Image (cartoon, rainbow, N blue to C red; front, side, top):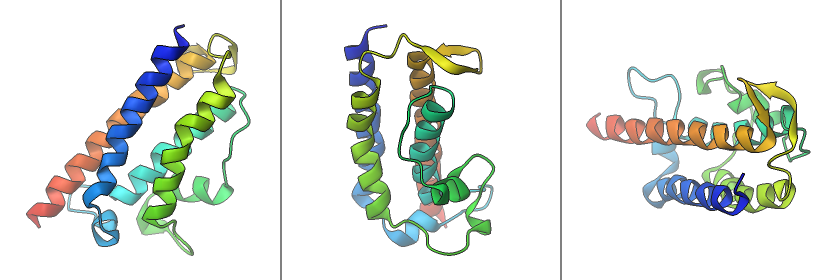
Length: 153
């Protein structure tokens, strides 16, 4: 697997995700327009949480994964169920900004390694990382849809 190209793609995709913060207020981050289950804040936290979770649980890489983030942002969670402290946009932005460099540090030279266990048929650490990039793109599309729908209300 071409490590440099994959890491460059990860950086490019993350740069697109980080652009979301340019015109994002705390209020807009928490809007859930009709027809949606989650907010922009949830999607941003979910991107970070799932990428770390998949690479840790299936890739076998030890990463920062606070239990609170699993409670808030794991698949199947939703803001309507949140209680207690919720990460600010600044906190989420910092996590998302720092994640690519941390992943590169942990994954350099390991992309062709066998995963600790397969995920959706993916059997190497690099394949799991590639899936997380696809996953991020899906949620970036959801964020854009949420922004558009919120501007209509």
